[in-house]
Image 1 (cartoon, rainbow, N blue to C red):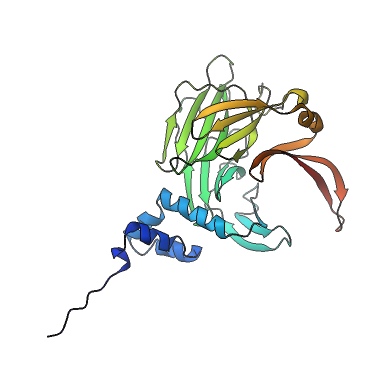
Image 2 (tube, one colour):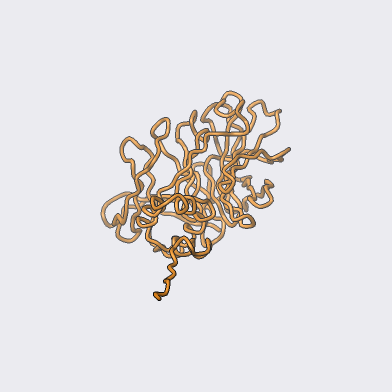
Length: 307
């Protein structure tokens, strides 16, 4: 009598084991795997799997590369992964969405997952785009808890930050609406990639106005303080001798503030080009001090980083 032979397929594996195998696949193979069946598609498109894949990809990548984001989409619809040392283009990623003004601005990047928006003031921060170029997945964030004010730049102006909540293993977006009448309280909402929904924060205390450019460092997003914009685009930093930074903690969902050391503020001056950045795990200020001509005869900035 012939014995029956039992077979085991990939679908018989525990979900944790299947997930660990899939996240180690090359990107192109992972993308093709979404077409195998509904179960694989559901697993690979799950925010928790995406989070694990991003962290795995980051741990395997070369630190001497940078991703170039084009500001004008009509000229180039790709982001390029470029070597810092040789300027060699390793790979191009096709941008899978189009903004209203065909311009693109990077709000922030965490573990390779990027949050982008429109450069144009009237469209900026109204439509947001979460994009993972490695897995070729993206999500357009068009909803809001505050439909009556979003996009109404006569009544308010907006600020956005992007970060990660370690406790819930969740990537999140914070959006702040500042009332132009300076009397009405600020409105704040937080988007959860894991739950894929916006949630408003009740009675938030936002101590200062923030600039458009910020950075995520160790659980919090930071913005330089600005003066209140009296017109659509009139955003200026406060006096350099009294420069403050606004922060948002993604775990406690509480805003904070602290003053930039006076010696750092004085170094910046009133006309210097500077911005916040992450440097070796710390919040830092990057500024251009002067110009020089490099060996190729091109003008470039001399940069100084102050931690």
